[in-house]
Length: 173
Length: 173
Image (cartoon, rainbow over all chains, first blue to last red; front, top):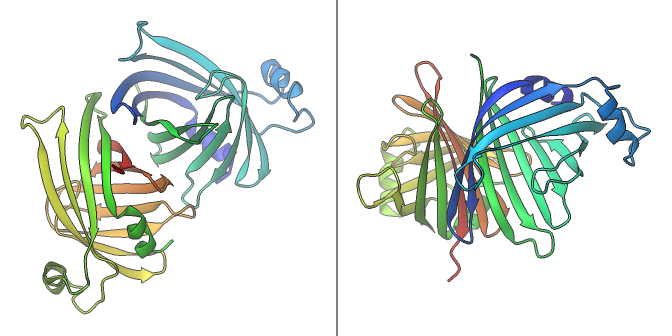
């Protein structure tokens, strides 16, 4: 599997159910959200902006894309949450490379993830943030169902802070 | 990874948080349970009983074991649920084979799962029941945290019935 094929399969709109597990407190979080994944052109001005200010300004991105989300969490004191992030993959080998993100997953800051694919085409993303390390894995059950799990650890002592799992069903109608 | 090493890592007691996602109804289920995994001898009478009545009675099992669970679901009308299952792996290649189960996961009947390991040692289990097909994947984050996801499909039309995810933390004290 190469990153471009994975992004092609991911493009579109998805209804997501996500569960967060806070292991220390045995607390569940439930999040329902709507996700939209849109491919962008390599010469898109925002793609060029983030690429040029990164250490990879001389590299050619593969299939940059945008993720937008809007949802409701049973933990949030606000009614809903929404946001978007720009993702710029830079391929090293056919099945691995980096992804620049304008907004990270575990911490809402610019970040760089390393990615690679397992033998069954599961995408593994590893991201070091300022205080945490996140490992995400994303795999397709069929063309209309994506599963996504994550583990967030403390950067300092590698203790587990949270796990999560999302079932993402393609929005057809 | 071979099945024996995986079972050695799994042996012990675990506190599990599990979330079920019913995609059609956007409903979450939350289950908290305690799991105990115990290795059994090859000549254990129950292991021999299930092996002998299977089509694999001439094969030698690798590292048979028992799983016991007890827990509480927010969907259950009973206060708690408990049960146990005997699992008898029969290795074909170094990283794949079958597992006979006295009690299945998606349906509580005797079943046979095919298993194999991905390149990162994730265990994949596929089981065909009377009305459903289940794919489970189990992977270790570290020696004290196991993650487990499942997807249950209808056998007839392959529609997705439920996904689930469990975070299993080793019980140390």
